[in-house]
Image (cartoon, rainbow, N blue to C red; front, side, top):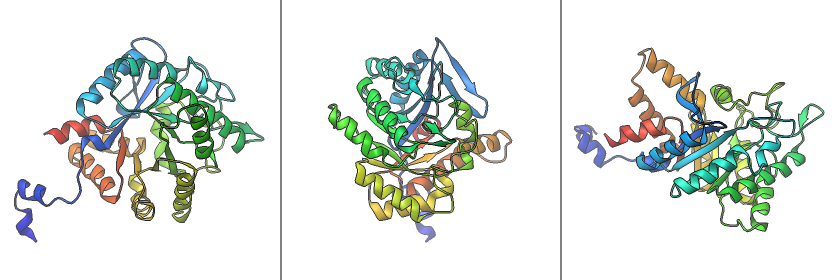
Length: 317
């Protein structure tokens, strides 16, 4: 077996899994203001940025050959129903207009969820202490449509409400956006690895948690059912989130559905590597490329990762 391992050239010749920049999507956080470039304390190298800086970042993403960006918005004001999510002059809508004018060739996916926009931090409309599924679905469809109208190339619902993919597909189709794909967070687990993201997106729930609508971590069959339902409802790409603690889920869903599959290498996974690398406990480049390759090897066609720009640079070396 060692005959095919004796040099870098030989190892590349027989390599079974590719890791390319155009498989990677870079998540970005956009906020109001001018010249804002505020580092997220728990996510070194990640920033909340104003639209003018977002455009600059988008240009560098395109130059690096990344697949695109996944955009999260931080509104100036929040309320109980997340009305800023579908405001024509909302932060995402304005950011999309700027991106499509300045960087038209870049694929921009937008997160469709109310958690960044609600004053309570939950992913929908709260009634009697819990998220009302059907009311929330109505708002999500409205939000997704507003993103499509503003220029989103892909809409990505992450809320985990039942039936939201069908509602979004219907809203898009009825308003002339039948060609806009849906990348559904189909298997999104109630994970401990989202903590740093909630600082970046300012979306921590004020009470309780999200376990009534996100998947219980011990469950695997349930994730498959969620994916099959979203495919039936009209999803074009399905997603597993998080990635590394759920590689078995990535593999199983790819094998059972054969559908275009994304995996989200989430903030906690990113921050753990950054923290260990800062301590000198591991080699960041080697650890990141190994982790991303493992996600590809498990079956992901697309990897959403905060390491995307760094990884693209390392892959060029």
